[in-house]
Length: 162
Image 1 (cartoon, rainbow, N blue to C red):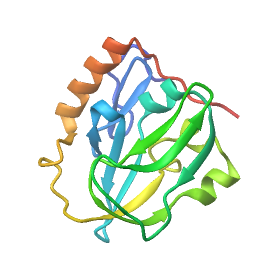
Image 2: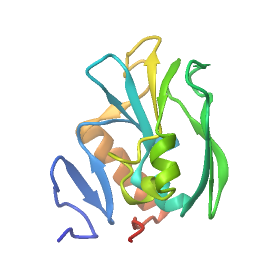
Image 3: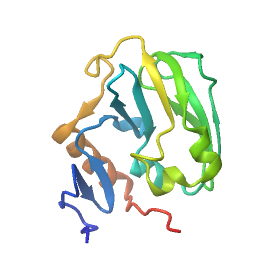
């Protein structure tokens, strides 16, 4: 069982106050967005465990169309949840090459249940993949920043169950 206070390493991540922080992803911590470089040069993006907890149950997502170019900081989707409606910002500029609309059509709570795998939001072909220049962090640096953010926000992550 995962200790909700923190410290346990399930698979490739750390859990702090119930919030999973995978060590192999890149993060825009202030926007609660994760990024994963894929083998084909694209980058998958999604909302973190902290984001899905703070937002509450996802009710609807409107994705930017495949082929659309997005600037860094621009909305790649609009998320409507039980507690919030707003943009899902992309930390990097690029072209949308895929969305996970099918998974969300089948289970709108997929990001609430599995934010880092099945609940990814979209894939971009980045104009440039330079995580440091984009202000992204990974590994222990990401864990340190997220632990501070979780404490500052007073968040204890929970996931939707069947």
